[in-house]
Amino acid sequence: MKIEHVGIMVNDMNEYLAFYQNILGLKLRKREWLNETVELAFLFFPEQPSVEIELVHGGPVENEEIVNHLTGLYSE
Image (cartoon, rainbow, N blue to C red; front, side):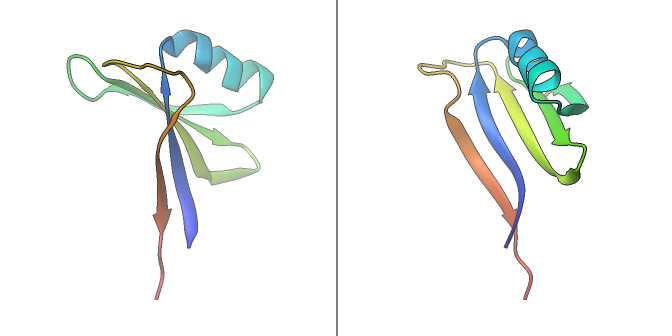
């Protein structure tokens, strides 16, 4: 199995984008609205661009930085 991305719920998209980019050194691949209330941002590690962190903003978030989902690729 290969990890494709990890989805993390956030309350403030701009704050978390700044943290992941400026502190951890990730690069922004794509930022988009899934619908009228949910915004997504995909960041990647320059040394391993196939693995992404997906920030999910919108809807109720009781606790920030909760992993919402983990997506993997399987090969047979």
